[in-house]
Length: 88
Image (cartoon, rainbow, N blue to C red; front, side, top):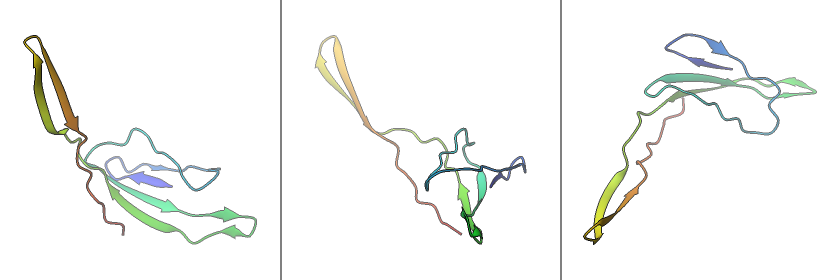
C-alpha cells in the first residue's frame, strides 16, 4: 500500500511476485508513505512503514564543451548527483 500525501489517495498493489516493484509517475518534491507486508500461506506479516521524499529534478553536472574543429564541438556531462534518503 502506498499514499501520496499531496492528494491523500491510498493505492494498493496486490499479487506482486518476488521482492521488488517499480512505481512509475511519482511527483517530484513530494512525500510518499509506503506500508509493506508479506503474505504467505501462513498469513500476512506485520507491516513495515517507509516514508520517502522524492527529490527535485536535478541538472547534469560537470558539463564540458570541447572544440574539435572550427565547425564541431563535443559536449560531455555527468548525471545529476543522487541524494540519500532517510528511512523512518
